[in-house]
Amino acid sequence: MSHSLSRRHWLKYSCAIAGLPGLDGAARLGAGVLGTAGAMSALGAQPLTLAQAVAGQSPRTAPVQPAASASPAAAPAASAPPASAPASPHASAGRFPTLSSLPPVPASLNLDFDVYYGDSTARGVHVAHAVYRLSHRQEEYRLETEARATGVLAVFYSGALLQSSTGSLGARGFLPRRYTEKRGRRPERQLDFDREAGRIKLAGDPAVNLPFPDGTQDRLSVFFQLGLLARGNPSIFRPGQRFVLPLAGTHRIDEPLFRVISQEALRTQAGAFQALHIAVSKPGDADAPKFDIWLAPAIQMLPVRIRVVDGSDGKVVDQVLRNRPAGV
Image (cartoon, rainbow, N blue to C red; front, side, top):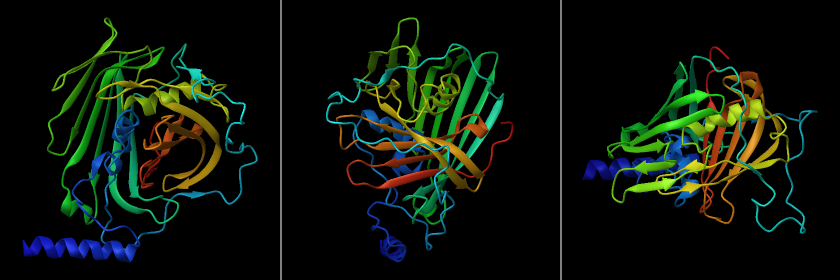
C-alpha cells in the first residue's frame, strides 16, 4: 500500500512539473489515449473519459507545427453560418457521399502514430504509440490497429487497445463485415454487418440488432473510407462543404457531421504535408467529443493527424504521423 501511494504521489508531482492536471486513476486510459479511432464511438455514446496521463518527464517540443503563414491555396476556416442558415446543422449537409469506382489502394500499408495528451502543437506530452495496418487481396480487406502506452504511463497501464475490421473492398470502397474491439483485459466485442438483411448485430447483454443505411462504416474503417471518398469526390471535399457519413457504434447508428475546413500546412516527424482539415461533430450534443482529421494528398489522402477534444471538459488527445508510409 505504501509503495502504491508513493508512486501515485510521484506521478502527481511529475504532472505538476509538466503543468498538467493531477492524475486520479492513471490506469484508466480510455479510448482517448489508446487509439483515437476507438474514441470515434463516443460521437454516438457518452462523452470520452480521456486519460489523465503523462510520461515522467517534461513535455518535449511538439513535432507538429502549423505553417508560419497560410498556404496561398489555403481557404479560410469556415465561419459560423449566418442567422438565416437552417436551424438543423444537417439540413444543408450532403447525404452519404459514395464512390463509383475504387481509387488505387496499396496491397499493404502501415501507419505509425505518436499519441499525445494535450495538443501536439502546444504542450502536448507523448503518452502512447498507435499503429494502423491495412492489407487486402481479391476484394477482401483487413484493417487492424494496436495502441499501447509508453513512458511512465506504461508502468500504470500495460494493456492495449486492439481493433480489427474485415470486409470487402470494391467500387464503393470499404464495406465492413465484422468489427472487433478489445480494451485491455475487458472481453472482446464483435459487431457483425449482415448486408443481406441490412442489419448490424452485436452479441451481449443487451444484444443489439439494428438496421443500417448503405455506406455505414465502423470505428476503424471510417478513417480509410474518408480518404477514398476525398479522392473520388474532390468537389465534395472543398472548403466549406459539409456532409454526413453513417457510423456504427455499439448501441446505435449515428450520423456525425463532417465539415471541410481548409487546406493547411503541417510539419510532422514524417515530413511536411499539405493536408485537408476536416472537423467532425455531433450536432445538438455539446458534451460529445469533437474530432479534427487532416488528410494528406501526398500520401493518397491518408490521415497525418487525428485530434479529439472532449466536449465536456476540453481535454485533448492528439495523434500525429510518426513515419511516412511506404508504398504511397
